[in-house]
Every structure is written in C-alpha cells, then in structure tokens.
Amino acid sequence: MSTVELGNVLPLWSCIPFVGMLLSIAIFPLIKPDWWDSHKQYAVIFWSLLFAIPFAIRYGAGTAANQVLESVIGDYLTFIVLLFGLFCVAGNIVLEGELIGGPKLNVIMLALGTLLSSWIGTTGASMVMIRPIIRANSWRSRRRQIIIFFIFMVSNLGGCLTPVGDPPLLMGFMRGVPFFWSLKLFPIMLFNMAVLLIIFYVLDERAYRKDIQAGYRPNLNPKNGKVQLRGIHNIVFLAIIVFAVVLSGILPKSPLFQAADGSVIGIHIYGDVTLTIPSIIEIAIILVCAWLSFKTTPNSVRESNHFSWDAIKEVAILFIGIFITMIPALLILQAKGSTLGLNQPYQMFWMTGALSSFLDNTPTYLVFATTAGSLGATAGIATSLGIIAPKMLMAVSCGAVFMGANTYIGNAPNFMVRSIAEENGIVMPSFFGYMLWSVCILIPVFILDTLIFFL
Image (cartoon, rainbow, N blue to C red; front, side, top):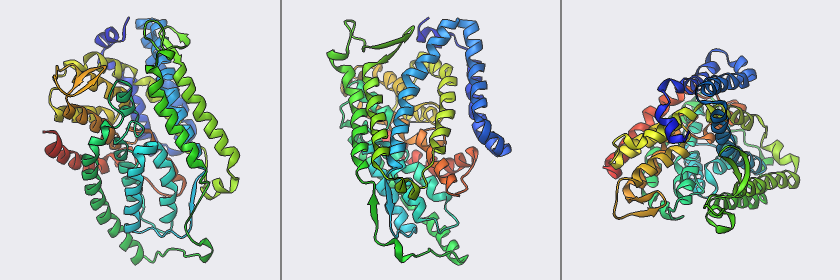
C-alpha cells in the first residue's frame, strides 16, 4: 500500500500515540520530574509500541516495519547525527573573559546569534552561543526571558536565509529552489528581529533593574582578563559539517549517485527503505569531524564550557519517539494536504506554521510546498514540485522556520537549549508555560507578518 493510500484510509484516532507522546513531554516533568528524568525512555517505548502494534495488525507487519524504518533510517538518523556533530564541535569552543550580561550586551549577542544561524544552522549557532550568553548572565537571578528569546531567535528565526539554516529550506533546495533564493526572506527576518529585540530589551531591562535592586552584582574577576575564544580551530570542523549538509542536497542530483530509474543509490535496508550513499557520506563526514574535534581539543575547554552529554541524550531519546508516533499524522497530511483549500499566502503561512509547531517541520514544509506547486502558477520558482509563486514559497518557508519556536518540540535546538539552561541552574518554563510565552509574544508578531507580508 502506497503512502498516499495509507494516508487516505488512516483514521484520525491513529494519531493518539503522537498526542500521548506530546502530553507526556508536557505533563510528566510537572507532576513526576524525578521519575521522568530517569524513565522517559519507557514512555517513548510505550507510545511507539502503541502506534506500531495496532498499525501492524491492521495494515500488516511488513507495512508497519517499512514505515517505522523509513522514519528512523530516512529521517531520524541523519537528523540526530547532525545534532550530535554540531553539539560535540560547538561544545569544544568556549568564549572566555569578562562579559557582563546586561540588556545591551544580551541584545547584541541575540542579534549576532540570529544572523549566525543561517550560515552554520540553527543548531550550530545555538550550541556556539548558548553557553557564552548563560555565562555572561550567571550573576543574575532573573534569566529565563534571555533563554526564551534565544530560542525564539537563534534557534528558529535566524535559520531562514539559506538551506544550511534549517532543514526545511534544505528540502526546498534539493527540489530545485535556488540556494540563495531564501535571502529574499531577509526583510521579513529583519522586521521580526527588530520587533522581538525591542520587546526583549524592555523585559530584560526590567528584570535587570530588579536584580540590581535585590543586591545582585556581577562577580568581576581580574584574572578573567580580556575576552578570548578557545578551541577556535573547531570553527573549521563546523564549516566542514555545514559543507556536508550542503553536499547531501547536491549529490542526489548527480547521475553518479542515481540508478537507471532515477532513484538515489544506497544500501537497501527493507522494503522501500534505503540508506542512500549521499546520506552515508554526510554521516561519515559529521562523525569524523566530531571525533577529530574531541581529539584535538584539550579537556580544559570542555570543563570551562561545563560540557555534559545530558542535552543530546534527552533529544535523542524523545525525538525518536516523536518521529515514530507522528507517522500517522504525516501520512494523513501528505495524502490530504492538497484538499485543504489553501490558495492564499497567509493560509500557507499559518497552516505550515501551526503544524510545524508540533510536527517535524521538514515534511510539513514539503507537503505545503507540494500543495503550492500544484496550484498552477505560470510564473515563479521552477522546482521539481511545479512552479511556485514567490509569495507562496515565502509563506511556506517562513511558516516552517519561524513557528518552530512556538513549542519546545517545534525544533530540536529548542530542547537542547532548554536542557543546557537547566543544567546551569536556570529554571525554565514548563511545556505549557513556554507556549504561554510564545502565544503572548510570537503570535502577535506573526499576525504583523501576515498583515505586512502575506496578505
């Protein structure tokens, strides 16, 4: 049975394990935090099996195995290897010196991280910038707003300018969207940056004044000396990882990596599942870079960074459950996305964004880009999905990238940043608490985007 046929016959209740997975992530850390820290893997196994077993009984073990392996091998493997590589390499770079966190410095660091995200990816920029901004503000008591806006901007918004920035745009590049086309999104990103930085400055200035009034002062240490970057050679490894990501989008188009039928060659796993040669090359390059980074960087750098494996372990465990349990939702979306009557940019922006807040934004982008390509535009960007009107592609791209900030699970760096912040003693909002921040701050900004750019 094809994926479209499956999507057409799957009932909505098949998405219950995915909803259960999300609710577990949202509720258990609130009511059973100690249990969740030690047993989250069992929740992942439970919800994954609750999807896989009924699915196998209804549609056959072979079909179930094919879908699960396609999700794990085709999507999750490259996803987690990239996050692992960037996490390792960025953890071997430390910014040392007397950086005193205050509203002005924080605005500068958020702006720098946001601009950096499009060139080394939202994960790369998040891992490079999160520890310096935490260290600079370590003397402060009220810090959660800094991390929340960091997730809004560095971990999401900043990834919109190149295919390297965020995986959905890489998906578009692989299907014919020119590499530098997304630079057209710069005015939208700049507008969002300006609005969010103004809001942040107001909130952080208020928190800063309360900290000062409460007697908090930065611990100035003459031994810290001037600001310096240690482990700077790891920037080369970051650049190589970025190159590997771009290469994974270029190689599948080469006849050298294509079979006679036009499919990408690779190692056959099961059914329709193949681990392609370009993916193997990407994985190998990233893992070698991570290994070399550790071999060539002194332990003292990681100690200065308070480096630990907890954040990447949490992401690896939770996201494999998310990838598996969201299979029915994606199948239904792929089969019925074109029947939703979306033919206006603002509709594409909100629908792509709403689903990208909870589902993987890469297949969500692909579904709505395909829908946009089927609308019969006669002028625009020529892709393998059809000709897409520029404003429609802008809406799909911005929805997929920007609205990943709406929840902790909207984009993997969100979870990693939250985990690193909590490791450093910053009390972060719960799943729903974070959503309250995004609803109050991001949704009004996205409404402005709609009125200015997508109507």
